[in-house]
Amino acid sequence: MAHTDDQTVLSDKTFVPQVHPKPSLADLLTVETSVSIFYSYARELQLSSLLSDGQAAVSIFAPTNRAVMALARKPHQGPAEPDEGIQINDDEYEKMSRENVKRWVSAHMIPESPIDLGSAESHPTLLEGKNISFTPISKNDGQGPMWRRVTLEGGVKILQMKEASNGVLYVIDGTVAPA
Image 1: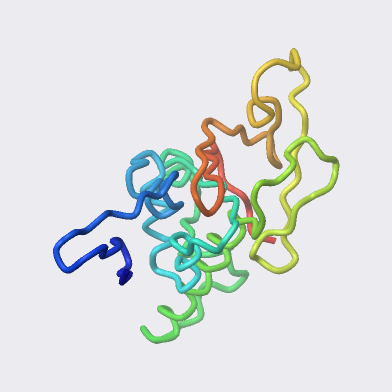
Image 2 (image 1 turned 60 degrees about the vertical axis):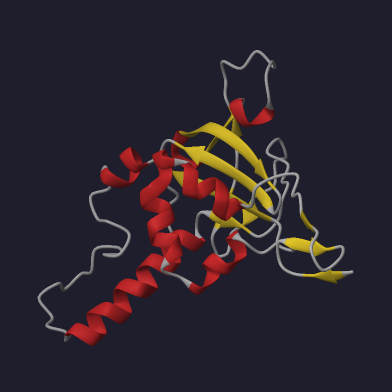
């Protein structure tokens, strides 16, 4: 029996497709149009390989397009610089933009899945020095899934949760600020 990426060859003429019980994070992000801006930024990065890696276990907190559009400074711009009058060439600007995007996307990804949203501990993100912690919603009746009963820093709510073969996608109504 020979194997290819998506099929198993039983004989010279018989193919049986491999069945994956859940889509990958990349698959979920592709079809979840409400987070397409986040996914567009994430695809620019080498760490995007985690999104389709079957061996990965990642929790992604993907901001909605509305949340990204509401940012005063977009992810590629990074934090406000004290002296914005400095002139840089196109290559330096491109490099700085890539680094800003990497920091921003990494701040929305926790390299473990599943995570305990109800624990008091904070969870380190892929951005070194940045953690995400969760706060119980005070008007919580204790009903429903845990992701509906907590907020992230700054009161950011989790709107949806979708399980993937290599992690969990949480759609959030705000953004995580890089450290």
